[in-house]
Image 1 (cartoon, rainbow, N blue to C red):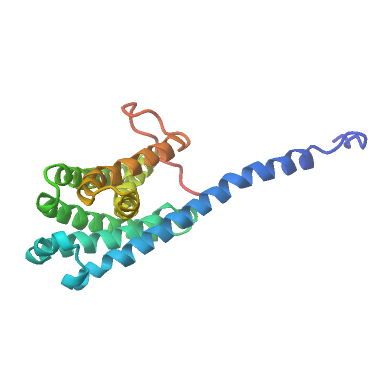
Image 2 (cartoon, helix red, strand yellow):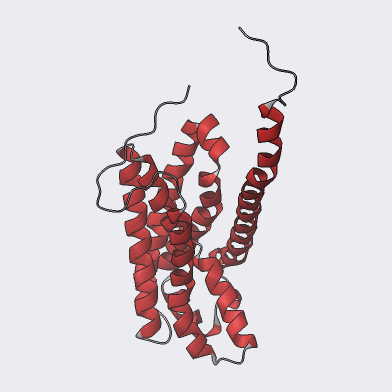
Length: 240
């Protein structure tokens, strides 16, 4: 083997050092994004879980009578939503998926059961919502899309269609996070002087449409995901 020419600088330091900065920035951004979403999910779950006490004092004034009359549907919707929003962020940790695939699958199944409860309860509660028919239709659409996207994520996972599984899981969690977006939108509209009924009617749609726009942006950046309708993505090769 020929000895390297000492007059020619080694290529390794040249290629490794400049790439470290730009490569690290996206990773830091993803970590910051994950922690932000996780904190927001936790705060939303903490705030919403108060409804599980069935204390009328914590209910929305305009909906107090409806909630008291349909406690079973309320518990199903809120209980499922709280569990799903707490579990969701952990499904997107690459290290957890790689090192503990069994735990990833277990928490994924719990998430799906929670989504089933939240979506079913949402379908039962939506027709009794305020500002009909605009808000009830919006919340019904949210519940239907949540159930459909979660079912498609489960089906893709069963087929080992890994990339589409991730894409549908992102959409599912974006829809669960509508609970957080709703609780941001309403106070902002109140501060802007928008009447409650108008703010509530728009929130029934914007709380999940905004999230889906963000989800589609993230999905478009998934490496290797082909356009919809082009067939099944090959399963990821086994680790190791």
